[in-house]
Image (tube, rainbow, N blue to C red; front, side):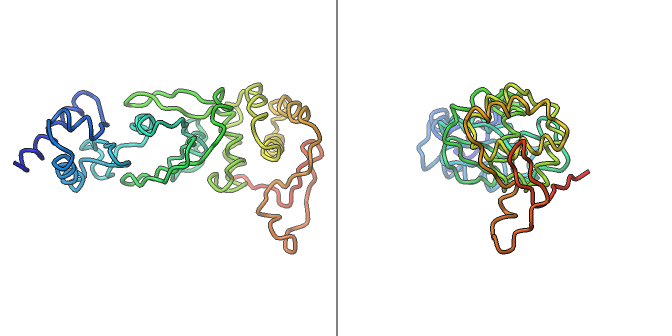
Length: 275
């Protein structure tokens, strides 16, 4: 009887793949197979051991097609939208992963980075690591979220403008100031200046200052002028460190090499681009 249940789930999974589907919920499978939760979990666990099924969240399953068996999972882009709908959370693929999708590919991105309206634990999905970054004010950046086609449907990603701002808002996730500057050198040509100015009003002022400085350093003053005007409309602009890590310990912080009066940014070390 148990073997029949396992075979039934295997056939169900194969049928989903044939229909172009790669995800399902425990409730869907139980209803389709006419089995209880215990019998389903037993059959699902067996398929997971065979690397034919992935369970990134309780009750949510991803079918692993044969061509991805050695990876342990299909690409996260195949199922991230369905997963976040299952979680009932607003989201977008962002940061270095979004930059890569926009063509900024100086180096391989080791994480599949997702910005979410809820704090969520990271997911190890085969060789892939899905990491979530929290944004409370998701509605404020709706204008910077785009739909992107995938092999199995669509997913939300940040626009080039929103990506650029996020790179400075989440510096650790972005690989540090040198890597951010390198990525921006590729990303800048994709940024819409008016959208950048509009979105910048929803970000912390130091984030906007740092981004403005870096884009100016890349010769993109025309791109940043609307953003600077939007920043100045918010009132007095205090001085900000380009890299907070450089100034973390006042006793050992390097002396400033530059003071950018346009953006009121203190530069203790000039960023190095990876050519």
